Length: 114
Length: 117
Image (tube, rainbow over all chains, first blue to last red; front, side, top):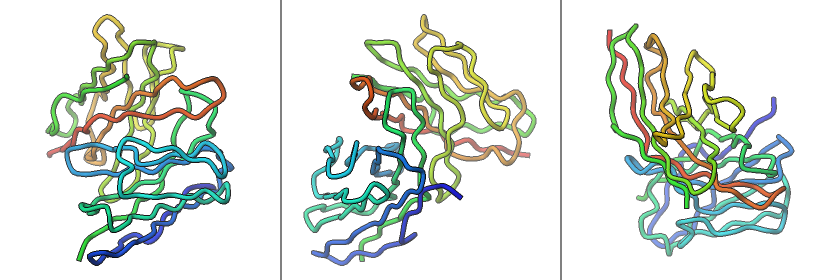
């Protein structure tokens, strides 16, 4: 089945620790996105990537980093500089050709701070 | 810049009653608008989208939305609510990227729909 997988489902971070969230897609999509979801705030864009080896900051990129070495993969690292990392993180992908396109979402990773 | 406003963070309806979830948009250009649904602890699933082809858009699970330019609205409706409709619903608007490039979505803050017996 084609789709987007995110792992792990739950992730715990200790103070001062960097953690990496995985996102893989087999939809052959060029564009990939990372969103953060907090209660009552909807989804906010962290980073997005149009193609391999290229990515752009979204609205709340501070304290996060990404890489796009392969078309299928777009991992997100939550660094120790992110002071309030507890949230639900969603990865999405789209064909990447225009404003009318549907973004397809993964099941999400919930990050909790110990 | 584009934006959407969802009025009502929580809506409660009885099973069988009409569902109406409100979304108003702000855009300096003709918008592309989306409704997504999220079940607890899951990702988002597209319900329907407006891409200027028709003002009344039909989606999955019996939902539909009407684009009204004069009211800058894109409200989501369903004639008869079912218990399985209980979820959070998000309205979103796309930006207008250069041709052939990926777009970005701006989401509303969401409306949680509760369906009671």
